[in-house]
Length: 412
Length: 126
Image (cartoon, rainbow over all chains, first blue to last red; front, top):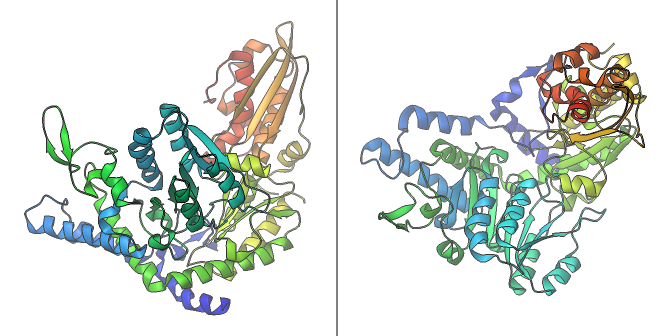
């Protein structure tokens, strides 16, 4: 099955112009898609074509360009919403996943949290799903709590139940797939248990939507945030929310386009989703993300997931050949996404990444915006390889080669 | 030989000079590199207006550890007031390797904490 996935997707490599680049005399091996993915020419061309032929602002122009821009923009929203199986009028364009989470932390959090309430997150969250809640708790007097991450890298639903049973949790905010460990969290089950305990759930899908089928109706969370730039698209984020919540919430940002009528002292709000889209949108980016989800849908998200799974399994098989290496995250590739964090005894991750770059192998090094998790793991930083449709087994071989070379430079 | 990871850089990384803690000490400072989370602390004993002894501790990449080690050697014996005059160019000169913009803060973290301890200046050396 793995070989099938690779042969099906390997033809997609030709769609990514950046893979023609050479760095330091080597062909590019891009293994940092969990940070940001590369873009296929279909996405680049959709944005170019919009700027070159159809550019105008949306929702205002009576002229032809305004109509075309609005159709392209709102058409992209419909296809993006369909891609994750949610209503398009409940699918809000944001700057990125971070802004989508902040939108909820401000517009819902400030209006609904208070002393005695708790927000429950996990130790494996990205800073973007930690800091907005720290600020919301500071402002409202609510308390921030963490579900622990054991050595297995997998959350305990028993621990979740125990915290929920105390009856103070108003919101559970959890990542769908960990950007550090790759853990695929059981968000459907978490949302179900949270709802039964009277709490809302926000899922950070920044790492999941790009690499696996995501069905928001099946997950049934209250809010779901993700970002386009990790999903082969440009930098634009999405927030999907439940209708009754979005209707009740105050707007996040005030300004043009989000209003129905502006009086001297007060205003009334535009309909959903525009109530939460103050100011001029990143129009070309939204259109680019529409092209990206078209591209992913054509590739087939089941095939994308199979490809990620196969490359992760291959990396977990080959990387232990490197002496002194430690791998982190769940061992079962059915329960982890396409991200492989590692450290090497005697070499700091920064130096690993620097020496990999000599062979044009791009890996991430650092705390991955997850400093609380780094402390749980007992490391200051890790190196991390992550995959997308354009990666191959050969890329993993090149990584192993670069790591062995790096150890030689360090005299290990 | 590697242009960045020269033998003496790797030697300072693997066998950092003046690594550890000093108790009692007169001055101390602690800071981190927000880009990578690397942390570095320093303890300094002052005698007759000079850095009489110094120990640094923490974790970091080869560049940051070697830079801290080399900087520590230069600081011991120096009048405390002269530490304020040391800048980024001085550190990079002491390192003797070319430092790319992405590794600049790695190279400067050691001086940053040592200068912080002696002057209270928490800014990055320029």
